[in-house]
Structures are given as C-alpha cells and as structure tokens.
Length: 136
Image (cartoon, rainbow, N blue to C red; front, side):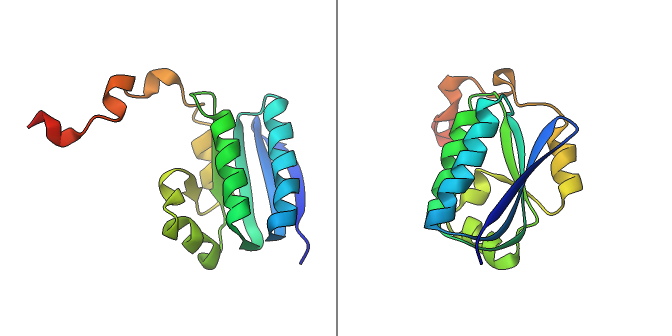
C-alpha cells in the first residue's frame, strides 16, 4: 500500500499522520515532510504511526536524521500508535531508547506540550560519556 502523509496542528504541536508502508521510496517523502516542518520552525513533532503497516531501515534513518535536526535542546520527535510488529523494529534496533514512543496521541501531545527540552535540562557535557563505574 502506498504511503500517505498529512500534517495537522494541535496545541502548537505538529502532528504528522502516516498511513501505509514506509519503504525506500516513501521514506524520501517522509523526509520532505519532516524537514519542511523543521524548516518552518516546528520543533515539537508527533508522528502518528497508527495506520502504518510496514517500515524499513530507510525510514529509521530518516527519523534519526530528523531527530538530529531538532536535537540540541531545540525540540523533540515522538511517535505514537505503533503496531506491535513496527514497534518490534524499534526495540530490536534499540531506537526505542532514542525516540519517545507513546501508545496514544493524547499521551504524546501531553508529553510534548510539557515544554521543549532545553540544554539546561541536559547533564553537563563532561558527564555525558563518563563511565559511572569510574567513580568507585
């Protein structure tokens, strides 16, 4: 099934509804949507994957690239509504540790409306890669 995308706004948060199969070809369309949103200054983005039946690694790469564009304390990208087999791909690749994945739109919007991540909420750079066992 061909992928379809639609953008809507709610509570100042961009919601990108995706539908169908996000493969190599449609990942470039997803990338265009995400980069356009970011270029327009939308740094809090919720991705609705409720109607997504398939994603491949190209899609994962696009999501990681977009996350890096809103990163650095500027914003967040959260996903919600993932079907179990799509969620499994995030678990296997451990991207579930990088992306916030919510069950519902309400949960994602509530989390994102709590405010944009700021650099002050991050640990000092000197402790980010520090080995915690080195303190012992």
